[in-house]
Amino acid sequence: MMIFADAAATGAGSGSWLGMVIMTVALIALMYFMMIRPQQKETKRKNQMLSEMAVGDTVLTTSGFYGILIDMSDEDTVIVEFGNNKNCRIPMQKAAIAAIEKAENAQ
Image (cartoon, rainbow, N blue to C red; front, side):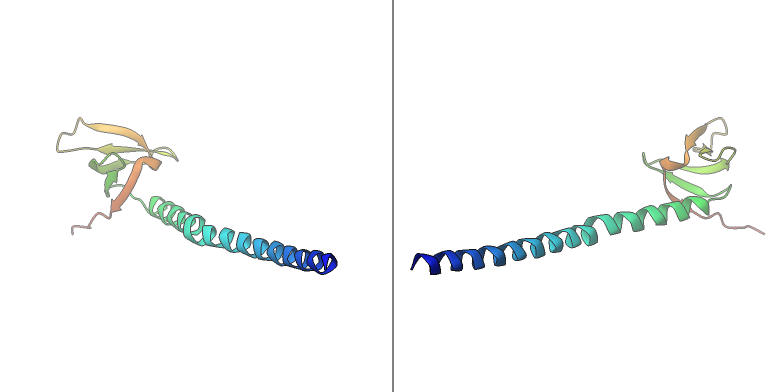
């Protein structure tokens, strides 16, 4: 009787081991599709947005300020003008820009 109980326990143990591996793989796949992949898509979208940025575009900063892009002198630095005051020009990193509205060409 003990031999059959040990054999049954061994068989159940290997089945639960396989089930644990399958559940771990499923959990990793779920984490990839729920967390990592959307973040990669967002990063790709933001990099494309920043590469299409041009002087004269209206930008929204991560701190919530709207301004007009005046100069793109450095690779990662831009100068943004805030408000109607021409003296309020602030250099900032491109990473601080959250959204861009393209300037309309007035002809």
